[in-house]
Length: 170
Image (cartoon, rainbow, N blue to C red; front, top):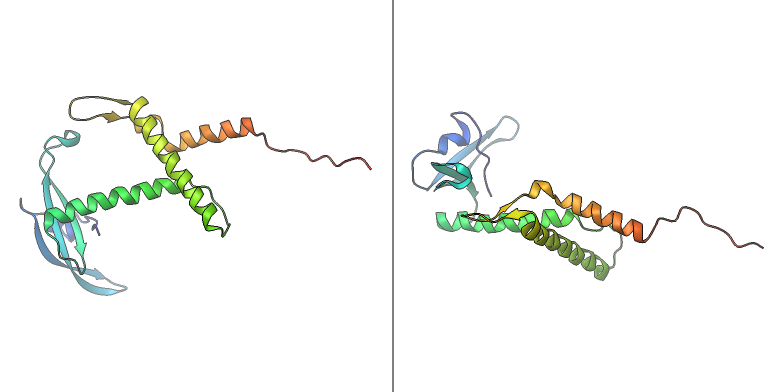
């Protein structure tokens, strides 16, 4: 799992030295819980102009019962981060229910992923601009929440809310 880089000169920031990736051990200290020593991996990379930045970028990971090379570790976590992000976004558009019916719950999850993919498609083809080095996506102009609100308004117009119930005359 990734470690948070803390401290101005000490803490985990003190591990960010040199131009090569390396393994090390680090002791976490807590006044309430004591101390624990864990194995850490410091992965170095270069910005190379990415996001108009240059120089070395560091990523620090806590390792437990894993044997993997440093470049593989960084690539593995990048893939894992994408999966976690898609599930977090899926939860933003999933229908909330208390039903115990697994088929209905699976249908709601599938519908959430379809809505998420539709949003990504709309972003890519209508709210982005091609440029050298990759496409620029203006996600802040059309957030997922906005698309979901548009869909909710369309459904409410098509199926208006019931505001009164009329009983038949005796």
